[in-house]
Length: 102
Image (cartoon, rainbow, N blue to C red; front, side):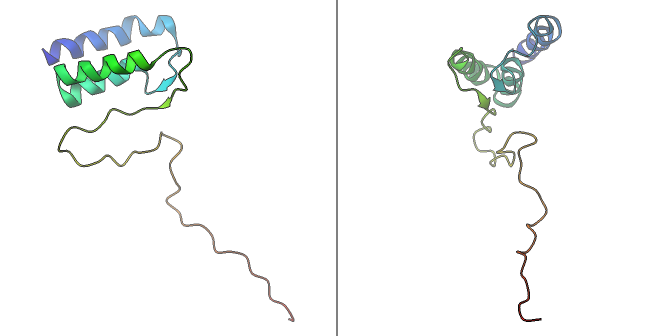
């Protein structure tokens, strides 16, 4: 069943999504979320998560970054911030100090 759902979601993303363009308020888009949810959680829970996500997608939704939750028993994901909004791996520069009396 999982493979059938994945094939249907990929077909939707290939054939239908380009017609609508980038209209989703969330990142990743609802179809990408559904595809990942089914792949990570299986057909039953993945479909439930995708249906909940589509239910949250309406004109008054704030939107934003909404990742698929990790599989039960899996370690927490490290990508807690959306792409492009992660903290810099470089440490902050030291504060500028001036020498007085020199």
